[in-house]
Image (cartoon, rainbow, N blue to C red; front, side, top):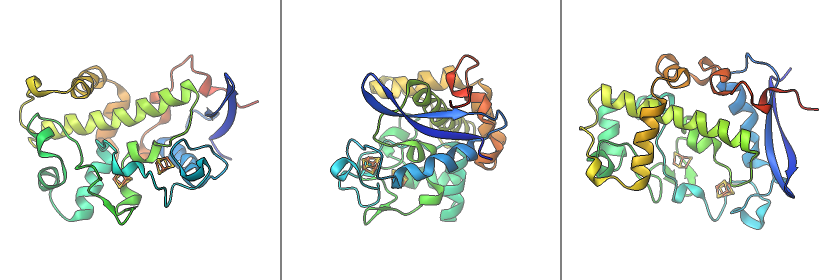
Length: 224
Ligand code: SF4
Ligand code: SF4
């Protein structure tokens, strides 16, 4: 039996996707398994999709052309291993030099360095930011959960890269507003168990979802 589910709901006259978690032993891999079919689901309204109701594959407005990707730590390690290079070489060759100079990580973009002929060349290894992005409305609790997980993973990579010496010292004077947001987020998140979980996890099934579920959150109730 599934430990969680995604369902459509209407809020303020807008159809949104919501998530229900009814088994507190659910892990991140369970959520990703549940989330994955949304890309191909033609019944879902996609703001930037072809005719608003097409699969993401072949999308003319492919979000990979403009995505700002800071990989989560599990994805980061797997990408480097898949390329058969060291993590340091991965950082130097696949991340944007202007951000590296500021002590920050961002995969080379516009388009994403992994986009080849309109298709992600590392699809099974892509990061959480990529896996979770879908241009449709989500319920606030669901959006917050996805946000919390994806940014926890990205914060873990930033902390790890700094610890391993892959990044120079921060250079705040060159930060954009988004850079400042991310650095502050890393500082705020760094002691959270959800961020620490990325350090000892090898795979997404090693990360319990309950780290990211607020106690008062409606996500934890069984769907009616
Ligand atoms: S999520 Fe990205 S690929 Fe999918 S329809 Fe929206 S813009 Fe296109
Ligand atoms: S890693 Fe893959 S899914 Fe993510 S932005 Fe790049 S091409 Fe798109």
